[in-house]
Image (cartoon, rainbow, N blue to C red; front, side, top):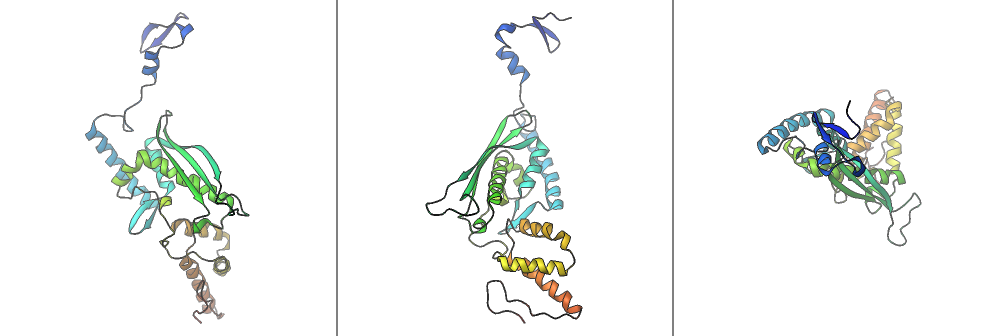
Length: 269
């Protein structure tokens, strides 16, 4: 039996003064943390291991469609950043999320002007290796009329990607992708997939999906289209669905007059 005033450390009996708590030296030994995510100080070995991770990561991101092409470059979506972190034991943990007041006179009936969120990137032992703060506000055209929860969610998503980018961005770059998260890419000066579909066109697209007999999958499909475009439903995608539905009706002998392009007065007949 080990006496009450002794403890076992590395198979050696060490005297411990429990009235003063564990010594600083003992705590340092017990909580020793590897200097890198790859558990080595050898630079060459770090690069070698990181390259192996990058090769695996590239295949996973491609196979699962976790990137979005914007301005000729592939940007990793938040799920891709979370995947990268999980491979190396790094996880995004929320610090806080809070509403952001807008300029005077900009109150919105659906909720606050916007949200701001902060996340930390932590290793499994709790060490903080990165952090990110991000906002989503109604000053952005894409989010101007969206529901309150959607703005909060996007602020959290952006902060998650930004926090993970700090320790993992160079590995994503080794995999051949842009180190700038997809959620951080601007959409105001020309969305990657054209203008956003109007509410009316979106309603017509839902009706078209019923014609295509995939009504039960409508919401997941629309969410995927919006996700692929970087957070909005492109006009061209909604129009394509309407065209396909019209073609199917025509093949069945039902002819309808096609609606004009979204936002225009003239269209195809």
